[in-house]
Length: 318
Image (cartoon, rainbow, N blue to C red):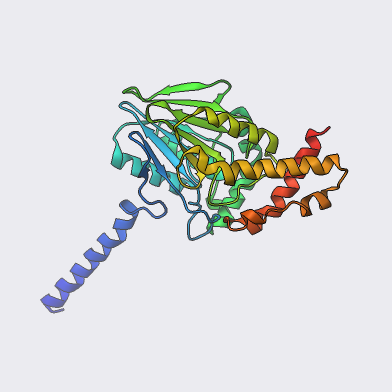
């Protein structure tokens, strides 16, 4: 083989080897760089579509808070790969250890990255009710994640349960006067959701207590009446920026229509329908949701939301 051709061949092989290694080592596949919300708070503000092969489950907001001695993560992502990318992004911003990871609720996109953060040294925190649902639904959630992301079922496993459950408000000290005040707010989207306040930055990480841009989801484990009470509880944070579970960070007023008005509208309607003796079919069909039709996921969720809200109102009336 001529020397020139041999050189070209060797160069090509070496180049291809470098290129093939680069994505695995350096490039992130799912997440963009996080946005800085305030001095100490960063967040990934996800798109609003449902989980699919293209977005690999990145369709929600996740956040982290940086002090002078430690980092805390708020929600751990939809897959272990996403969680690994979160860890890599955080490492680019700070060398500090990730001491805590909070699961704001038991939906898979809030906790399926737990094992990655546990391996990184973080204590995983949620409420007892959310932990119980994670344990009960882990296998089914894993199937959902695999199906949504186009993975083989054997490749997706439910993570281990959180290490610590919250039975009272807890303050996490991150150093430099930066604290995270974590508490439960009761049954909202899920059985006992958590929120976190960063007083130094006047930021509240609200998780799926708040939605904008897409229609909120009322589930079989939701409690519409208590969700309204939880929202009212957020009014105490005057002048704060709220990072919702879905949508852009904003003052609480930005969520008044897509979250509070929707919840109070559907709840009031169902309670009145029950009082009038209407059955489920009439109550659901008579609730006019057309004002919310432009929100993402409206077609998929509107009817289901009304059905679950009726059942919850019926249960509450006993």
